[in-house]
Every structure is written in structure tokens, then in C-alpha cells.
Length: 119
Image (cartoon, rainbow, N blue to C red; front, side):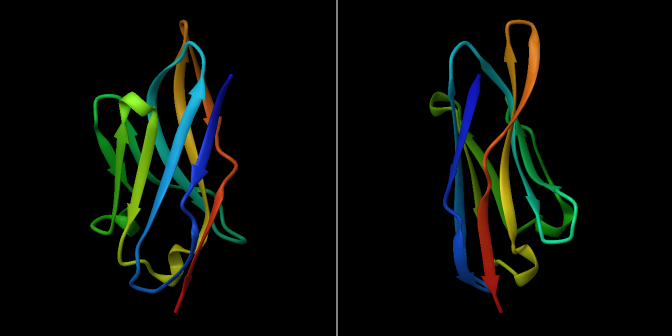
């Protein structure tokens, strides 16, 4: 089993910044990819940003140039730096990790952290 613990959400004014962290813990696993998804009220969950084990990244078009994802492999932690936040970025942000345990891949989710951007 792998646990994901998120932190860093909160309330910020438009134009401000927040940094989300997601730490993975457990035993006998290797991380293939980590990412952040978000879900606003009444909307489907969507990919925000993702980073693979080799450092490749991809972003939703709506956050390109404003958000940056990074990871510390030694700490099994991923970070999402969010700058120039807009009210439409308001959502619950979920950390996701795809891990390899033995020869089997597993998909894990964090509990979610609320990000609220006021106009």
C-alpha cells in the first residue's frame, strides 16, 4: 500500500501564488509518475500537471506558463508551484501517483486539498 499526503492548499487572492506538496510513503515501490488533478464543483476531474520518473512533464493548456510541477525523487515528493492564480483555478486538487510494486502498476490518490482563489 502507498499513502499520498498533500499539503499547501488554502485561500489566496487572484494573482497570488500557492505551492502544493504531495509525499508518497509505503514499502517496496517505485514511482513511475506523479501528478495533480483538480475538480471544481459540478465539473469533472481534470489533469492539471504530471511528471514522470524521467522528468518529462505535461500541463493542461489552462495552466501552462503559470503552474510548474517538480519532484524530489529522494523524498518521493512532488510539488506544484501555482503562480498568477485565477478564480477559475478554484477547485479541490488531488495528488495522483502511478507506482510499480513488483511487476504490477497501481494508481493511488491523495485525499485532496482545497484551493480557493478570490477575485
